[in-house]
Length: 306
Image 1: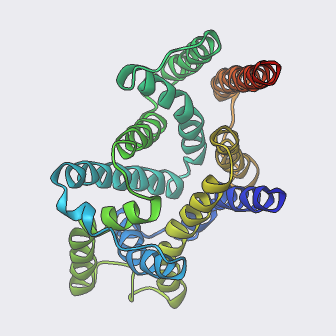
Image 2 (image 1 turned 120 degrees about the vertical axis):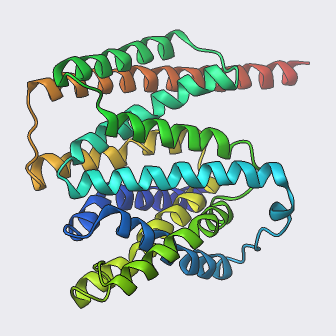
């Protein structure tokens, strides 16, 4: 059991480290349009996913394709995740990495709000305070900017709704990603062919380095997901939940110290409020888990005494 947990931690940490450091990859593709990067990311994900599924012996989801409701949901999730990837790529290649970090810090709290609205989940006092702090952070950002921080909000919204919809279908992460990429593949493959035919794209017309980086988009997309899937099977959900803060934290550090993006007082206040909300939410989750553990122990002792 200890070895299983250790493997789970390794898989989970590796997944979030790759996601957190992903802006380095997209920065290397500056000069290539976000739409072309997205097209290659989708196109090359398909063979990589198939290869990983073959290696770990995951079946092709044939039954899913016969369920109209499931296919309808997966069409919606394919649009959401494609839009999420496009916004993230555009932001990174346009020196707005801090905004992507903020979006993924907001995401867990946004997911809590979605759970309350659509899954009728109960809101604890800790969660209420966390959501209030996060909302204040977003409102302050709106006031300081004079407009909506649309990148951060879109990343949080699209990924949050994506997660909510994926909960409605019984399909594994890799099989789901395969179906989603296959849904949009005709469009992205057609776009790649159009760029090649009109000689207006970067692929095959700039350098071998750019070509290889675009081909690597499939690996960047699927490998961390496969690692995350493996880690999630071996670790408690709350542990995975805490780990997810690693990715936006690394992205934040990259933005400030590696990419030298401006981190002013207004951004500090925004992040401070979001971080405070996450800390409060985390404390609430830990207390809830500890209470459940104590309740189980009490129930076990009661059974022994009987």
